[in-house]
Image (cartoon, rainbow, N blue to C red; front, side, top):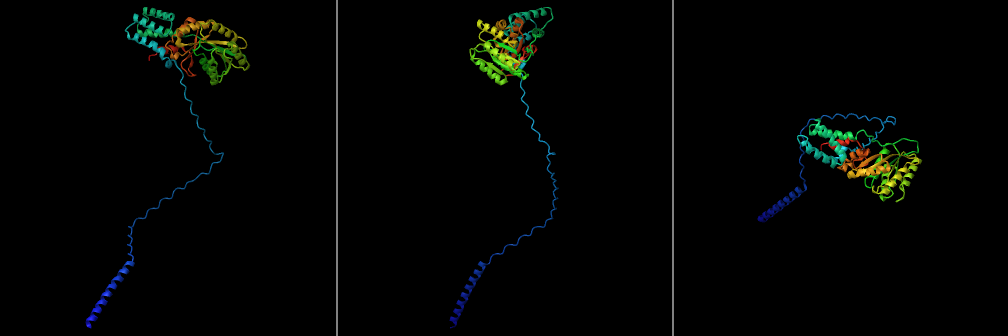
Length: 385
């Protein structure tokens, strides 16, 4: 009996122990772990308060009377136009003489070879036989008299002599003020291809810039493109133009142009003319007629300008003789001088024919038609490259 009670007590004790263990586990699962206590920050010195920003005073808006006017932006300056100069545009003509000049300076004195080199250089530059002979004969006399003793002095004397032959000539374009309705007439003559139409266009632009009113007359009725080219130039320069039918009477076109200029009080008529080969008699007869008709009515012919291509050299001298006889030429326009090695034609024209070179073309642009300046021309020929 006692052993039974003892076993029962042991069983009760085991059950009680197991139950106690289970109750403790259940309670520990339900209790959350406590959060760790926050760390206390180290004490810091209190920061000085920032100074208060200065008060911004906003001025009251200006009234209309006090408001400053807005400044307009300054206009951009127009690009400077490079003016044509003999020094910069005559490299080919200068090159025809430079080689001879260098050879002459390289010698210790003035020898027979010196004269041969000078003669060849002047003839190649189309100065002409007559002018070349005159220049060299004068220089030889000065060398013989000991006035010139060395190559540098010889070339300096040649330069001075060539310049003196071109100085003292009136090269201005003649414009005679007259009564209203009495325009000046400038006729342009020359063979086809020398640049008559272009010369008229450039000159019209210059005359209009000088304050004159201009009318163009398309008198070359035998070349289909001539009137079209002149019309283009008239539009570019702001000039008026009179043109006739293709193959029509050139004299009638020029007469009509002068009449219109007279009726509108236009100052200047620039008249183009036909330019077939100058060896044809009918062309010269035609130009004589044009010259007579242009002088009738209210117009006054104050210039007859012969246009010559500088690259043609001595052929230009023949043209000057032919056209001069037919139209009473008053001056010469020498075109394409910048592209020619034959600038010496100036001496032949002026010395042998007595015609002044008044204008020269030194390029393609509208500003490259310039008055002929003998001093600048000669200096450009002798300038050392």
